[in-house]
Amino acid sequence: MKYAFYLLAPMAATLSSLASAEPLSFEQAKSRADNIEASMSANEAERLVKAQGKLASSAFPHCLRQTSSIPIKFTVVVQIDASGQVINSWHQGSSKFSECFADVMASSLSYTPDSQPFYTSFEFKNVN
Image (tube, rainbow, N blue to C red; front, side, top):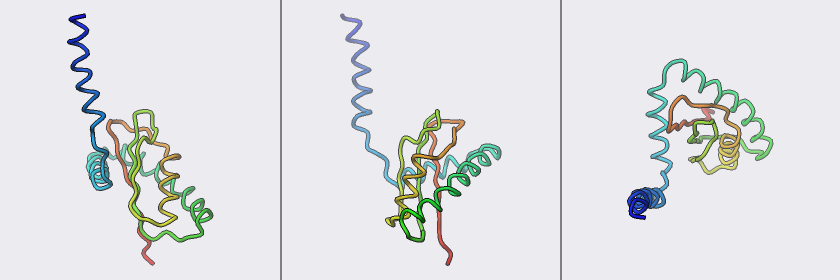
């Protein structure tokens, strides 16, 4: 039992610190995405842009139909795990369209990152 205590004590401290960790704010997640995207190789960045382009080509028409609203300005940030699943998402912009796009990005982005942790963002601004 003596050994079990010594093994469990550090484990309990680690679990306690994880449980008390504050969730990231939109700004913190966006900053992480910007830093990660800036450090990507050209090939990795191209793969990400293609995945985001594929997502956008289906999400924009879907969200236009769903919300009957025109997108103005929004940013969506997602955290993707090593298997390519979105495990967290944040968005800035409170329109029905931006909420729809955030939902579609969280459920449909198809990208498996080369490194962890991985954050990426999609920014849209209507220039009309």
